[in-house]
Length: 271
Image (cartoon, rainbow, N blue to C red; front, side, top):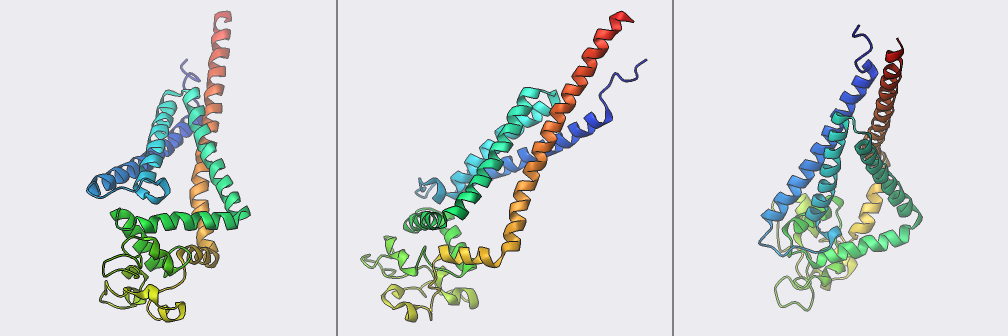
């Protein structure tokens, strides 16, 4: 007589899959939040950069917190089969996907404005190079990997108070070691290789450092690695679309089970 009283096999499978997805979503948010908080604590003795885009740790904390909160809501909604929580969870993922699509379209349509905006953010980061240790490491990694220097040009480093040509120190009119070709190709790092380089012409400086700006270098890297960029975009969007599909399939499954229960409850007194 117990036949048909429990949830269907499809309902159970959807619940398990969505629980796994929710746990993955929540775990990624937890890791991002933990890394961001740890980095903030580790650099407590440094002056933090207030600009959100120029401070990777703040970005990690904000995004990680959002993912943690809504991942937790998704887990509760799935386990409790709460349609309202699941709708909120699914709506948040949809909003994230739409924002990503809008950002991509905006970047393609307004290339010049995006390029200028990116350059302004890089310039702000250059100015605070010595104020934030993880920002410093990030800029060094960017310049070394893309073989670039500055935002639009290596002379952008003049905006930094330590590398400005008006600065009193030895590093005046210089650039960081991460701009130097020797840092990439030689085994021994010369931390003073970029000193006085801003006084040289672009052609002369090209013998010692990478003179191309990092904004243009990144654009060229994207153009040369469209397959990688496509893979990254798919790797980000496809799991989100899968989460949306699972979420709304499960909501539909919950409604079907409730309709069956109501139908059976309505028929039982008549039998």
